[in-house]
Length: 241
Image (cartoon, rainbow, N blue to C red; front, side):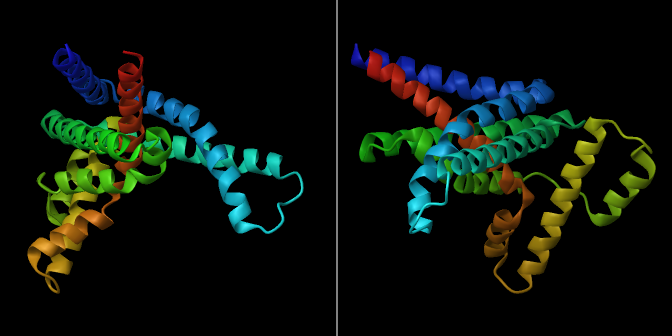
């Protein structure tokens, strides 16, 4: 029975990961809006809770009416991160090249799976609180993994990019066309950075450094959010069983 229950939890986990990636691939606007709302709902309480612990570290004497200040600062940070998560989520999955977007969705799902496993490992071994730890600490490593995965996607050269901007991109592009061009621009810029770094470092090391400085790292905010929610949901199901 225990094996069957663990198998069921794994199926639910994989279904949640696949469902999130599929929504991003098929409904990028819905994905972006939902991500922003979830980030705001989750972040509002967590940011305030974090500041309640941090303020005594920064101040020997708390500022007057510190409670209101903490709520205001926490709300501002939560709103900022929610907007960032929504915009990044939209740019991640919005575009016109369906083959490229499918690969992005696959890389997103694989990275999300690894993030969930990392959170569950910390829960079991260190009794970590997934929402608190993952929300504040998981964005960077997951962003790095996602960025590294995207480095394997082809990038047009500057000449090809200029041709597309001149002849293929309309004067008033749609959101999909603009997002597609931005992605290609990011990929081309990342490729230039890697080539420049290759003049100094070993090519494999240059590739790794290029993944770190890539704009694609920002997707880690979105990945961390969903990783902690899935891990927390599975943890609660296991606790109630």
